[in-house]
Picture 1 (cartoon, rainbow, N blue to C red):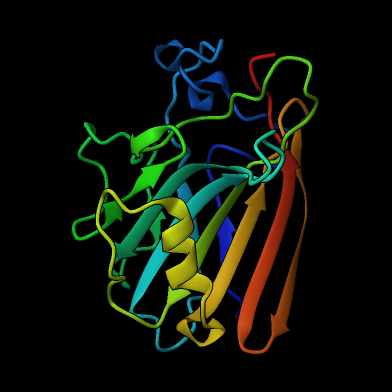
Picture 2 (picture 1 turned 90 degrees about the vertical axis):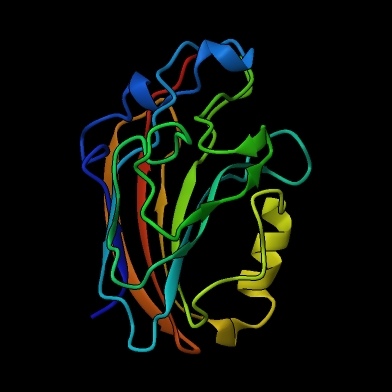
Length: 196
């Protein structure tokens, strides 16, 4: 069984609700609820000692994309991040898990907010099955450094699943499973509404 990632908040034919879009508190012109979506995964490979999750926008006009959410050291018996788990004040993050710094600054989920007129952006939620119980990072570690620890040596990762959510359109289109050099990947492509 391949590692797969799903959500109760984005399904085929539906849109990502405004409750997941960046809130006005951030000053980017959006007025959403800024709640991280619920995410579930299954099919973790044998040997998984922890999970990591991130949300990344590769289309942000920065030259390097934009990290919206990073969670590491999720215990291996956990298979879900609840709705709004990305809010540091919610108390919904699984015990032992750690959120690290995003491109907004502090740890925690920051929802989609592409610049007006910039066109569709893809928001990639990824879960990693990790061979290590914890990564050597802390809450102030940048997303790029977390990515380095996750991807510096593919042997550290034994599974990976993605959900792509371009804004302004509806639905999860398809899922595919691939096995490449012991990396199990599943892609779910979909599109979600943003604040433009």
